[in-house]
Every structure is written in C-alpha cells, then in structure tokens.
Amino acid sequence: MSDYPPTPTIFGADISSTEIVIACANSNQAVKTIANNRQAIKAWLTQLPKDAVIGMEATGRYHCTLADGAVLHGHRVYVINPKHLSLYAKGVGQRGKTDPLDASVIARYVAREGDRLHPYTVPTATQRTLRNLLSQRAGIVKHCGAIRQCLLATESIGSAALKRAHKKALHSLQTLIAEIDVQLHAAVKKDAALEQKCVMLQTITGIGLLNGLALTHRFDRTPFANSDAVVAAYGLDPRPKDSGNKVGRRRLTKQGNAEDRRLIYLAAQSAAKTKTFKPLYVALQAKGFATTEAIIIIARKLLRIAFAVWTSNQPFDPDKLGFQACKKP
Image 1 (spheres, helix red, strand yellow):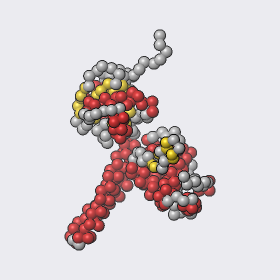
Image 2: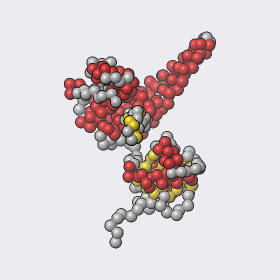
Image 3: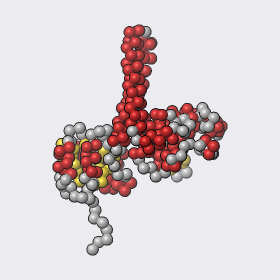
Image 4: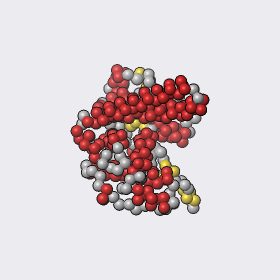
C-alpha cells in the first residue's frame, strides 16, 4: 500500500459572464461547458469528487458564484491573477487563445504551481461590501482624472459652456466619491472589532480614514505571514535584475491592486512632511535617493508599521520608531 495521499482531481475554469468552460488537468475527461448561473454550477459541483481542486482566473465578479459555491461544497479553490496566467501560457508555448485552451492552461498552472498559491476563502458580508465599494471608488477616481485632463483642453479652447459642463460632471463624481466614503465608514462601523482596528491604523502618521479603511480590508481579508508579504502584495518590493557580474537596476514589481498602491504612496507623501518621518526623508535624499525613491521607501515603512499595529492590536508609538536609512545602490 502506498503511503502517499491520492492525487486530487484538478480542474481549470475559464469564466465569462454567461458560461464556464472546464478542463481537467489529470484525467481524460473532455472539456465541458456549463452556464454561469447558480443552478448549473451547483449541479456540476455535486458531481465532483470530494478532493477536487478548482482554479479560475479573477474576473471582477463573474467568478464569484463558482468560487463561493465550490468552497461551500468543500472543494479547494484558487483564484489566480490574470497577468500571471497570461505569462504562464506564453511560457508553456500556448500558440492560440480559446476558452478551452485557457481552461486547460489554468488547470495545468494549478497542478504545477498549486503549492505556491493561497486557497480562496468566501468573504464575509463586510469584506464583500468593502471590496465592492473600494473597487467602485477606484474606478470613479480614475474617471475624475480623465475629466480633469479634458478640462485642461477645454480651457485652451475657451468654451465657457463646455467648461461649466465638465466641472458639473466632475462635481457630481466627487459627490459620489464622498458618498462611497460614507458607506465605507458605515460598513466598518457595523463590526466593533474591525472599527477599533481601523481607528488604530489611523494613529500611524500619514494614514487617514481612507487608507485606514483600505488597510483594514486588506489585513482582514488576507492572513499575511509577515510585513514582507504585505509590501509584496502592494507591489512595492524591488525586483532584482542581475546576471553574472552585472547588477541591474531594481524596479518595483507593481503587483497587486494599483489603487491601494496609489493610496499608500499618497500617505507616504503626507508623512514625509511631518516631524515623525521628515528626518528619514531628509536622510534618504542626503544618501542620493531621488524624491520618488525616498517616498516609496517611506511607503514601505508605513506598510510594515501598519502590519505591526494590526497584529499587536496596539496604536502607533512614534517614540519607538527607529530609522536606519539604507544605502543608495
């Protein structure tokens, strides 16, 4: 009798708004297509073996029904970054792109890289609300930036009526953002423990309500092992590019949520002007770091402090802050 556990059945699911294409990595099962609705998904999940593993691409909201349903049925689920899957498909020589091919690549990716992936868990009602509101806010902020660029063009044209219309649209979006902020705060206040955590995060110099809410969502949703994992999740970890005796220029990986990264960068810009972090900022510039580089280093520092505050359940104490400005590479 073998002492090794049986190999689980691994599925890859390529998901669209209307259908799900499913491929199996370690059996001769044919590629299958089902409708992307609760009834069809439930019927398929009940036919699976208990040890089934299901991988899928993050699609915004289209994957949620399958991911949540599969976890509730006791299956292990991985929701994978689309960029990682695209690069993997090129790496393994996929020469075309169809839904069955994509499903097969997802299954293959999970079969070979599953040990490195974090299993998906069903979000709580508060986590889901925060995620949706933060996502909506990020999209609206992006559109506000585009409208501001249009305003610059309008001013050069000199059309007063068009300028007023643009400003009215911008004001409406800003009002919507303010309402989303209210809803975000209200969602956190429903959970007393979560609200306390959010308040503690705001004791960190440079972290305001919005960043406190965003960090609260990230820490509550993801069980980070250490502060390095937090920095990597925000895409602020430098990527080495060395070969032989050549030491290449480090660049940020910029993985993860772009809006979260923007918010923590803005928090670092604010913190760099305070008496708490200005000595570090000045020391970094004295060592030759450019302004953006210095701000990014402070942003990483803020994330590490936020992780410490979250895990210790203690407010930020500036007196315990020690600086050791790193050397310019």
